Image 1 (cartoon, rainbow, N blue to C red):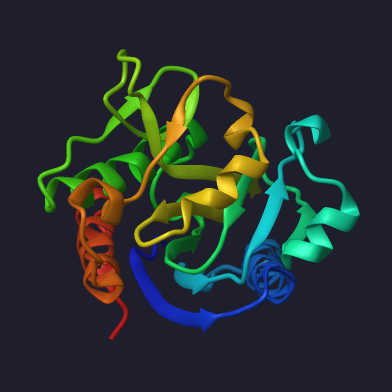
Image 2 (tube, rainbow, N blue to C red):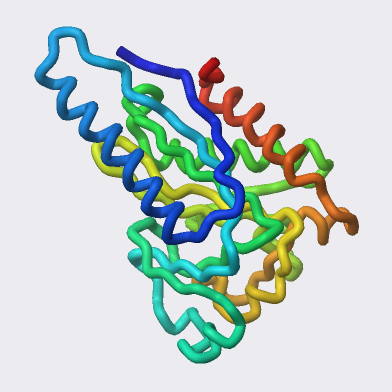
Length: 233
């Protein structure tokens, strides 16, 4: 039974460790449900979630990331109040912090399509459509997951990073859109392991503070449209 309904929740300000643990709990529950369903004549629908969260300053690095892309040592991290985690998502190193909208979709892709490449392109499309609502032209870069501005120019800069994990077609981790983010934190890393390209935010592009709740509402609207999901009432 395919379930296209999705439950959206906002965890507010939450440590990266606690958010990761919460994700793992939901992730395991969905996978356990799928395992049990194989024994049932009439299986239960699996759940789909989209969680928003804001993290205190933290650097996270993916499975394929290089530790040398972190430009601070442990003592410097402590002095600047920045946490650091090695994660089980894809991708290299990135920053999460206040002013950034982090989205964690925990989807059973058996409810949609079983194609991780397509899933990532759909996540990018959600962000591209959201940026278009602010008259910003976001774009994809071949071989570099995420959303960029002014690709192909010396001013190319990333506005949204992405990194996911999937098992049995269940997803976790997700995207981080810079809205009112303090971009100086990115000076302490090689963002996403990519040399020679900058980082930006909605507020920097528009030269004003942005209503983050309004951005979340636009993301949800486009998420429903791109993934053809329905709100869970």
